[in-house]
Length: 218
Image 1 (spheres, rainbow, N blue to C red):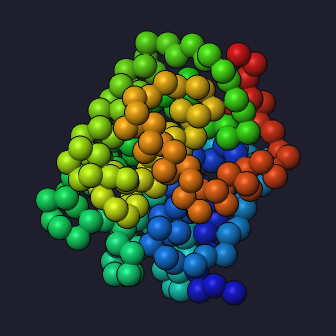
Image 2 (cartoon, rainbow, N blue to C red; image 1 turned 90 degrees about the horizontal axis):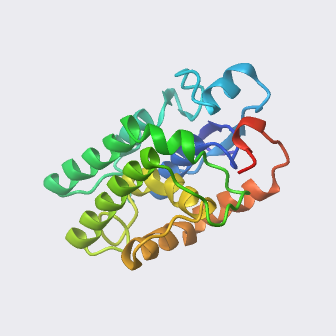
């Protein structure tokens, strides 16, 4: 039994759950994972981005409860675990927080037009202009970080909160067959090959629950 537990929703559809899980994994905090039922009304509303309830992800660590990925990230950062959630150097840390903030508050067209669905595969998917603008901005962020800090992760040799934030985008780019340049393609593949991502993706394929709104026929 771990000293911490993380409540998530579907591994296949739950982009915020994935972020919370990766934050804990990257920081090295062992958690027992509890899964909210997709059929639960509050959980379903949150999964479909119809309610800002922050039911998931929810971290309970001793007497501390943190819900929402930013609260989880800051809690992990304050623990001073061996694997840093944010970069140690102040300027790089501020840049990382800024990049995370864009994902927390932005890219609504990407979220609605390309919902996370790890089990799906849509070859030749036609990305409309609204989502294309979001994709272009994300790719610009990735290129800038990779050029500044040398990769293979956004802020250097080890994954940080920024990589946890953008990991669901990596799955979306795979699901919807989004073409990337060589550097961004390598970054996507690096994230997807991380052992924690491999475990999550395996869990997504093992799930049987379906959410019709997130399984459209294109």
